[in-house]
Length: 591
Image 1: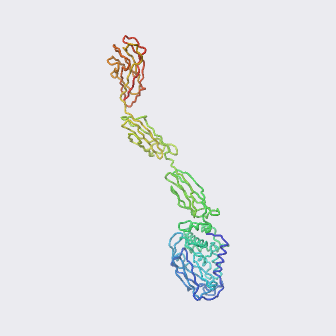
Image 2 (image 1 turned 45 degrees about the horizontal axis):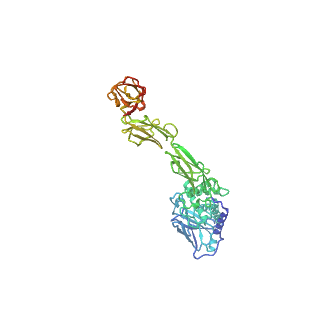
Image 3 (image 1 turned 60 degrees about the vertical axis):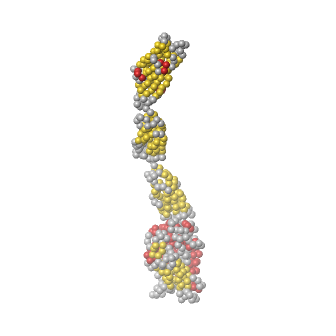
């Protein structure tokens, strides 16, 4: 709002002098003088416009007992929807000053969008004072006057007995105090609508100033009469005719806040050419951060004007986010800085964007993590394999959290069969970081199970086999027999592993193969071995001669390697030793 442009200011004052000058007297016109303009706070519709003569305004000293303001209107009109009015001043009035007064009517408040009544804001109407019109009348010209809160301040400053020079001084004083163009001659535009093509910078500045008045009222409260009176008092108390720095800052912030609001439909009001206090850049103080989901991150931005100085205190910065909750959707600047905090109950990445005026920037990228989130999982089984008819295999998922150590009790862990004919029962949630489930299968096959907690998982393949009930071992003789010689007797020891659930009785040791019909005497009394003695008086050839069937206890899974041969010997039918013949294991079948 504070346009510091002396060249423009002097030009405005010159316009004021030209419009308001005149020396009294002059030729009368037959049709009267046209007076038109706009009544705006925004545009006032349905307001009554009355024009009064200011009597004896040529002198500072009023005549005794004669009030300066006329009591009978020279002419009047009703403002249209855009606040416009047009009045013809009688041809008999060609010199002197004028008072223009607006009463009644309503307007849309620029800052709030609310409909307000003029009489609620100004008990005696909103006014403008116009200095001696004789110069305009002489030239046959038309008069133009905007009526706004600024012209009302000038009318109030002119006092109850204004002189022509006093009117000029008051209008100039208000223009200077608010760094405005000609407050009478400049058309008041409506910033809540797109400006017409060709509008001047002066008109744009005036529109922003009027909207700023509304924003200031929204921010600070009070009626327009009260606000105007307080500001006028500051101007008159100042040796330089300026507002106090505190009020100046509030006005500049209100200017930014209206220009940056959705009610402003004219981006030009966010440019330094019209609004020198407008935000030109947003610098990120905190560009990225990380937090636990139960923590918060402060996002701070620095907002500067085109000259790289901080925007006025109280300038609104709006914040948006892609995740989480902001402490506020907006914050006001202090020394150009504005801050909000961001929290999120869920993990993820958030981008916070800051907007002020016509400037917007991604202010921060924030990553929220759950310290209790599972970060690794190890799946194990209590047995290397399962048995189709045996007990269930217990699977355990050991889950570690992001912050280290076991996940909290109750953390969900899911188990699923990925392949194979298995069944899962009795799954538990994590306790002490470990969740368990039972796995069974009715078929001899591998079952693949996957355990999942949060975003981590692991698979484990568990083979299932049928429970063996017996191990069948076949023995044979190997070596070389002399020509024409047969085996008449065999002595051999078969060793078997203890602790594998193997057991055997003599009846389970029988002749087979070439030894059919032979006499076989087994000794099974010593655990871990079977001693065999075989006799055949007719003699037998080399080959399989005995089958031993071992019983296997439940839960045991012996292997072929659990059976080994001990000492063995052979004799011929004449009882002579056969050193080239020994006993070996022909095969082991576990079933």
